[in-house]
Figure 1: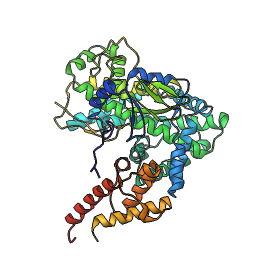
Figure 2: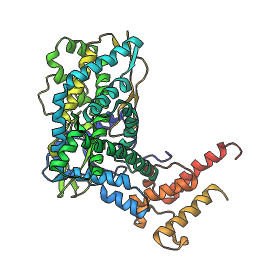
Figure 3: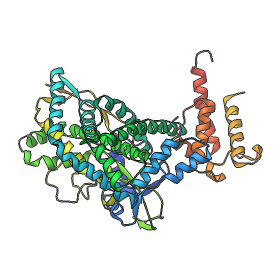
Figure 4: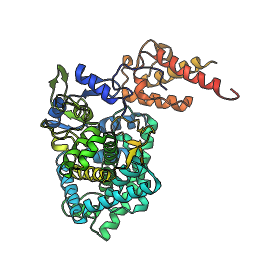
Amino acid sequence: MNTTTSDDPLAGIHAQNRDVIYRKLREEKPVYWSTVHAGWVLTRYDDVQWVLKHPDAMALEVMPFLEKLSRRGGLDLPNLLAFCAALSLLTRPPRHEAVRKMLGQALGGIARLDLPGLVSRRAEALLDDGQRRGSIDLAEGYGRALALFVIGTFLGIPDDDLMTLSALAREFMAVFERTVPSVRTMQKLDRCAAALTGYFLPLLAARRRNPGADGLSSIVRFADEQFPRADAELAQNCLFFFIAAEETTSAAIATGAWVLLQRPGWRAHLAADPSRHKDAALELLRLASPIQFVARQLGADVELAGQKIRAGEPLMLMLGAANRDPEAFPDPDEPVLDRQGPKPLVFAAGPYSCVGAQLAALEVEIAMRALLNRPALQLSSNVPIWSDRMNIAPLLRLEAQFT
Amino acid sequence: MNTADDIRNWVRGHLAGVLNVAPESIAFDRKLSDYGLDSVDAILMAGELEDHFGLEIDPATFIQYATFESMMTSLAAVLDARRQSAPGA
């Protein structure tokens, strides 16, 4: 039902119109209250970074809202509530520190796997397949395939389960969209959460009986030794790691490919100079901004760009807008190798920054390098298809041909 | 009974129930917040309207109607369009 038009600039924002909307907001209303999303929207680099690094900034607390909705409407959403409660614990001290340590240790174990070699071989194999067929969908058949391969290898998830998990995870990503959810959406999310946590529970029990070298075993071991948790909470954490790693990395790889393949000159330059690949991958990440915003709240009242923001009010920090702020990144819509300015806010910043940032950046770099080895690969004339979501909105289809 | 009346009656009954007031006291030139109703109430009301009339309603849009009148007019238009296009209607 779209019979009203809203004057809220963020109503109806998606991957293809967002940069125009962000520009206007940065210039005219860098801090404004969005009625559609019921929160303050920040689009300038300096403001976004200031909040991210503010000592009183916390992940936005969504539990009171969900509990009110569930109680007042008599809705039965136990799995969604449990997931959000676990997520909420996960984002607050002291649990926050412990979970980061747990995941950091599990990620550290990746070093034993020679992940760069594995990812690189998988990328080449996917491109070889495409070359035999003459074409490849760089969204599903490359970005998503690689991201799934990495998280599947890391957690030690059987290959046969990955596609089912991925489909559920994609539906579940709606939980990170800060739109006012419909009752049906919440009920669907509750079913997704049940299926996803239900998948991880027996896997955790199996790793406890029979530990391996994978991340899941490492998580179980760490939890049992230093951080005793109910398996249900660990399963919810695993679910979070899975969706956080899969959707965002697949979005970054596919969007990065889209940026790269549209710029033949830049592509040729990089193909000839591997020493710049790391910088180039960071620029692709900046332009892709696979997470468009993160939500925070402050512990005290502040004034920002002339607006009075009260403690506890939701803040939507538009990383995607900050990452194209010309004040921080001159010529913001182009990848530039020798940027002197501040660091892009791809993985947020401060105490809640992405714990998998290095791994994700490495995946993007390896995926980009494999593409650079295939000069015959060109974007097809078919229009790419983007997700219509606002926050984590990957390309759904990006066709390319071997010419 | 026509679509507009169906919707008016439903909205009147629903609000009277939520606010615990007499149905005839509901004023349609008001909006949700005038009655102290918040986004949680809007989400729940949109959900019940969906179930009752078989519509799909985006609660974010729903919250933004200027008045109940404009919300009901819009819903009636959607329902009417569908009833006319449905075979055998």
